[in-house]
Amino acid sequence: MNTLQRLRAATGLNLSEETVERAVLGRMAATGIADRQQYDAGIGDTELAALVELVVVPESWLFRDPQAFVLAAAYTQRRLAAGERRLVRMLSIPCAGGEEPYTLAMALADAGVPPEAFAIDAVDLSTACIARAQEGLYGRNAFRGKDVSFRDRHFTHEGDDLYRIDAGLRRRVRFRQGNLLTTELAPARSYDVIFCRNLLIYFDVPTTAAAIARLAALLADDGILLAGYAEVPSFVQNGFTPLPYRQAFALRKDAAPDDGPYAGLPLPVNEVTAERRTRPQPAVQPRERRATPRAAVPRPPPAAPAAPVRACRCASA
View 1 (cartoon, rainbow, N blue to C red):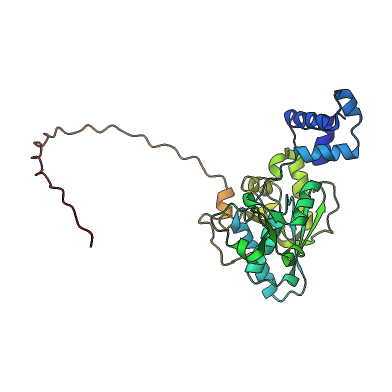
View 2: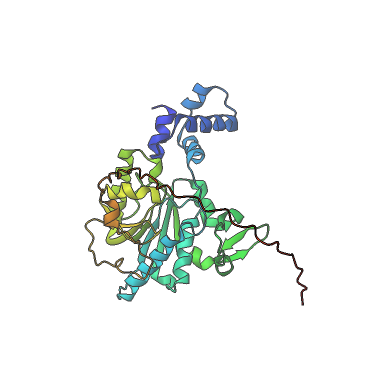
């Protein structure tokens, strides 16, 4: 396999030749190797991992699409209220620099969920992202929403616009490097909640189907999956049903019961149900408009000019 094929196989991403070429040229400059054939021939596991770091897209921020976290917290409360005596287990993949799993931990804490009641696994392809996530230190770019009051509750200011996540929340998240398509992540049906957002958009159709099959195997039968907005149709085509919660982009398995823990949560519900949104609608034929002749109506005489209005100054009290 050439370098492009090796990187596609290692990441599962539908990488373009331009993206790989930029990464290769960057690594050639970093290693001081000027000959392309020599560089390609010397790509081992370590160098391949370095190339992977240059082609992944780790962009994220805290409380991105916040309704997803509101739904996850409400779902968790529902499970705990039912008297279940086990951990509510959650997965964030890909987790980038930890922004998503830490947001999930904060949302659960703010909802009053005890820290001993949940556990979060967070996985990313990038070892650099995992190292940054484990450190839990974030700059101004991670706080993008209008409401950043959570920063005062869950972060310590360390100067130079840097903030560190609370140590107690950091302990609730377990990070590891891995690949959704190839890494053995957990036994089947291990997770009640899975966040997998904005990953499938980088896959081709066969890889998308394979990734969704892996996620379906990991998700509990009555669990929920939170996706990116553009990815919902792909999940619907591969065994998932959308849940009708506005701006959460949540789904359940097709075979899941209608009255599962996700049903009837006290959250804003889409006015158009998921079933209606996914059902093809008949085309609407445009109405034929007929020109109606205007009756000859004499124009009214022009109005008399208005009397001039004098400007006055109002003295302030």
